[in-house]
Image (tube, rainbow, N blue to C red; front, side, top):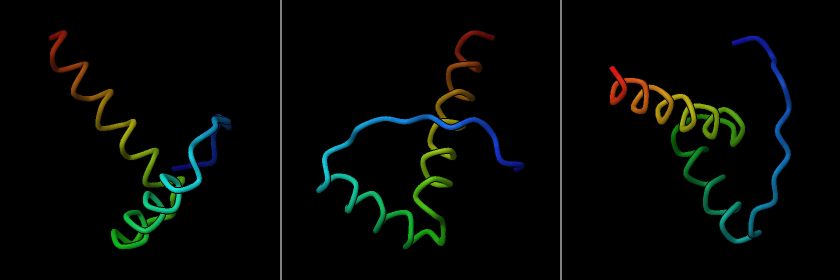
Length: 50
């Protein structure tokens, strides 16, 4: 996926550390992991509307 727009948001430091560990265990960067989560939720929402 080409680089896209930037979204800035605040997150608790402990939650960020935990999320980063999960992302790394999945072989992804934190940014890529969050992007995948968002894509999955968008797909689920789209299916519900169809």
